[in-house]
Structure formats: C-alpha cells, structure tokens
Image (cartoon, rainbow, N blue to C red; front, top):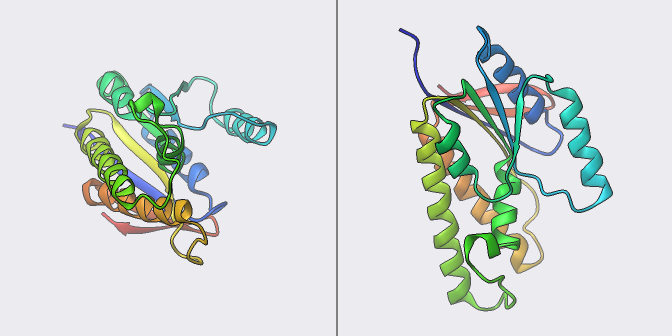
Length: 197
C-alpha cells in the first residue's frame, strides 16, 4: 500500500534553487495522474513582484492548480488535503511576512511601536502558534506536502527591530516545520542536500 501523507521542507538562501527543486519533487510525486496544487503565498504589490510571480507561473506545468492565498495556507491545506496528491506551499517566508506586516486578515492590528516588548512577545506567541498548527496540519494531510522556506539567519544581525523579530520568527517557524517533516533539504547553489529523512 502506498504511503499516505509526507511532509517535506525545502530551505536555503535566496536564489539557491529552492522553488525549482520543490517543483521537480512535486512533478516526480505527481505521477499516475495525481493532482498538484501550488499554494502561492506572495502578495503582488509592485511590478518587480508581478514579474517574479509570472516567471514562476510560466515554469510550472499548465495542468497544476494554483491557489493564491496570502494568509490562510493552513485552511487551504485542510480543505484540499484529501483531494490533491501533492500540495506545494511556496513559500513560508512570505506567509510569515504577510502575517507580521499585514495582520488584519488574522484579526489583529498592525504593530506601530517596535519598542513595545510586551506586544511584540504577544505577536510572536500568536504567530509561532499559527506556524506550529500549520506544520501539524501539513504533516497530517493525506496529500504529500512540500513547504519552501528561506534561511535568513546566516548573515548579519538586522539593524532594525522589525528585521530581528522577523529573522527570529522565521528561524523558529522553520524549526517547527522541520520537526514534523519526514524529509528536510537544504539548498546550496542549486544543489539539494538532504539533512533529514
């Protein structure tokens, strides 16, 4: 009997080949007519991002289903997890950024005072709870789920509080997904290195 449900995390730096490798993995898993759902989390707010999104669309097979959702990725996975063979979430990095910078769809007001440590800690707890819930839902889905994320903590410490909060939250979010993942790949210069599974 074929294994049901498998969570894979693909992480790495900018332009390391994460999305391309994740798409290749999804295409391999999609054999035998399995439906692939590409869950895109990018919001298109400027021409550069519009061009980037278009390049990604053109690279994907035409028969893949694209679902654009900037905030509610977990709900999408829960809703379509039984009907899709493969779900590719690209990417966790932008999803977290959306949650942090545009929290109104989550029922929260944006943070305006980055010196308000108590409020920042409340936001961090909320967003990490959401990430852990997303990781659990993805790991329990009947579909195979591939999550793309970035490693942003390997460089300089960000100069501003927002950058430090984001870097820390993304590192902890990646850990939450990796802990539940069956496989984790780190991408270096277009080369996937399996570090778990």
